[in-house]
Length: 216
Image (spheres, rainbow, N blue to C red):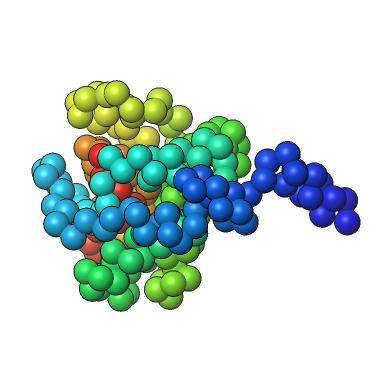
């Protein structure tokens, strides 16, 4: 009862409305979501050593997408995971990407950053994809053991040094010989994905692909 009253008062102060057109009762309405185009010509141009392929649904230069991801991660609007995940789902279905027998692993946050945010955005996205495609998800196999600074603004070399040995596999027996899909929100140089993949390869996974909402 108290929670219902609190949520009602909160909705009066911060009404739920589309971040673009202000339609009520949704943070990103269907009409505005459809303005974010799927990119069917995406090819990741960076050299990858540990990942077989990176799939990204759209470009990060879309202003509405940038706002949605910012609100999701830094204004803590977890409900935006649903429309943002729909972008990935639409891309995967239209491109007919084969996901059978894959296990999803979200890119983990360090415990300190997780406590600050209250959730891991990649884990929420992975959960949506696991439900839609009926896939396994492993949330507790991989941890971020070093609280690395944000990657924004760093060149590739500094990104790699920043991430060196930042991840650790806790339960290698759960992923041995498994086909893995890494889930993240945005990919830039691919340094984070590659460092995670390097860690997973040491745990003897079968092969690795990555899926993100957007590429920058």
